[in-house]
Image (cartoon, rainbow over all chains, first blue to last red; front, side):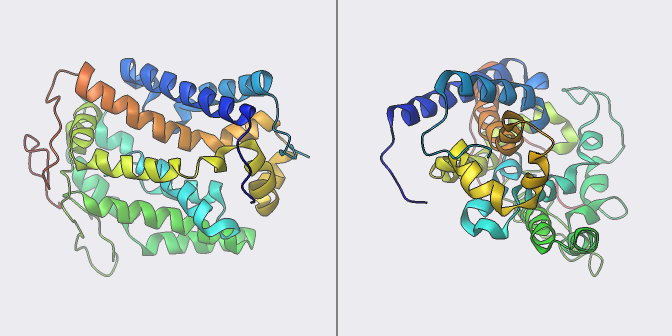
Length: 67
Length: 243
């Protein structure tokens, strides 16, 4: 895939997912049995974060979408 | 045993080998060796205070036991079944690749695995860190993330971080979906956020859990909350060799 310079939207997406990752990590650190036993425990959080990312950030202009 | 490495390895295989790897099948293979036994190894409850079996090490890695789930040949046979059922070579190859990565990663602890079962019950164990599964999930988490096991996980996460673009929806729609019939099938049944969630969840969990376990083990938990990167560590853990 050809490399193109990251746009403001791309940088915002990286920041958004970094914050989401750290938020989940902190939840896990304080409540390990509810967040850290397996990837299935993260599914609701990742689904919510993915849905919210679509609302907040929109789609990259290079993204062909689900088609 | 390895922790987050099993969540992350399949993504690196996908990014390095491209369309030769089906990520969902590779993840399924990576989870397969432990899927029916880990709960019994740790016992009920986070502290593992309610034991289910008398000898968790024998169950998990031994024979008699289900140690054959940590051998190479058994997953070739399962991949053969997948190929017969699906006629999809990529799926079969991806499954066995994920399972073999799990098996070989688990050679790094002090119990190791019966790689050549059923031809031999000899355990390949490289002793980089102690196997502490028999002490329950809580103590195992402390032992693993304060020893070189945690470093092993961090290395996979750092390597994956260099490939962060593979987690963009653009990459997913352009490179992943059209090259794997699993996603083409799922596209007719699930929304785009659900597909992206299935695609990203294991990597998200893997990286977040490394950070979370480190924070918990070093700053929240009050038992042996210090790093010990000696080979075969941590020193305080009971020595546990092959069963």
